[in-house]
Image (cartoon, rainbow, N blue to C red):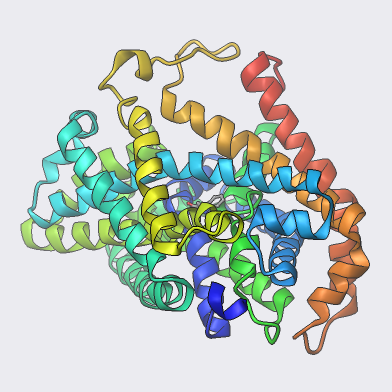
Length: 463
Ligand code: TRP
C-alpha cells in the first residue's frame, strides 16, 4: 500500500518539500511589510513566539495524523475518529482548492514579471494595473504555472515533489543570499534595515498581534491538512518533532531574510525615506521594478530577473503542496489514477480561479465584489475568497485539528506516534505539545477564526 502511494525517500527530502510548502508568496511579500509596519524586531520576536508556541504543536499533530494513517485528510480523520470527523478533512480540501485558485493567479503574475525583467521591461512596475488586466497574458501565465505545478505533482512523491523541492529550495536559498549581499551594498541600505528592524514596542497592539498570528499560521501551511498529506508519505524512521522544528525554522528564516533583501532595495530607490512604503502586491510588483531600473540596464536585468525567478520558485513549491492535497484525496478515496486526478484537478482549479483573475480591474462586478463590515472600499472577488478560505477556514481548521487530536484521537496516541523514530526526545517538549493541543491551540485559533468571521462578515468591530 505504502509503496503504491509513494513515499519521501529521505529525511531531508521531506523537510525540503514541507518547507517548500511553507515558504511562498506569504513569506516574501507579506511578512517583511508586516514587520516594517508592526514594530520591527519587536514583531519578529512576537512572530517567532507564535510560530513555536502555537503553530509548531499543530504542525507536529498534522504530520503525526498523516504518518499514522498513511492517508489523505478525509481518509485520515475517518480512520482515527468517526465518519463525522472527516468533515475537517473535507473543509481542508475545499480550503486548499480555493486557496490554490487565487494563489495560482498571483504566482502567474510573478512568472510574467520574470519574463518582463528578462526583456528589460522595467516600466512594467508603473503599468502593474494594466498588466493584471491583460487577460490574454495573465491567462497564459496562469496556465503555464498550473501546468508546471501539475507536471511536478503528476510525477509522484519522490520523483516529483521531493525532487523538485531538492532543486528549488537550495536554489532559492542561494538566490536570496546573493540578493541580500548585493542589496546591502546599495546606498541607503541601512535606512531600509532600520525601518525593518529597529524595535518599537509601541507599535504592538491587538490588531498587530492578530495579524501576526494569522500570518504565522498561513505561512506554515497549517490548518487544511497539507501537512497531514505530506506526513502520510513520511517513513517511520523519521523524527516528526525534529522535522517540524526544522520546517518552522526554515520558514521563519526565509521570511526574515526576504526583509533583509527588500528594504535596502526600497530605501535605495527612495534615497532613504521610508515613508509611504506600500505593502503586498504594490511593494513587489509596482515598486521593485523601479529599483531594478535604477541599477542600470545590465545589472537591472540580472537582479530583477533573479528576484522574480526566486518569487516564482517560492510560489511553485507552495502550489505543488496545495494541489497535492485534493489529488491525494481523489487517489485514496475515489481510486482515481494519479495522472487523471492531477490533470483533472489542475484544470478544474484553474477554471475556478478565472473570476479571481478577472477581479483586479478587468470585470467591474468582480473588482467591486462586496463591501464588508464598515469598510468604505469594496473587496474584490480574489480577496473575498482569501477571506473565506485562508483567513476563516484555516484557523478554524487548526482549532478543530487540535481538538480532534486532544479529545478524540487522544494525546497518548499522538505521543505514541511521535515517539517512533524520535531519538533523544526531550520530555518537556512532548508535555508542551500535549498541553498546547488540549488548551492553547483550540482557544487561540478558534478565537482568531471567530473574530475574523464576525469582524469581516458581520461588521462587529474588534480593533
Ligand atoms: N505557506 C504558503 C505561503 O506562505 C502558502 C501555502 C501553501 C499554504 N500551502 C498551503 C497556506 C497550505 C495554507 C495551507 O505562501
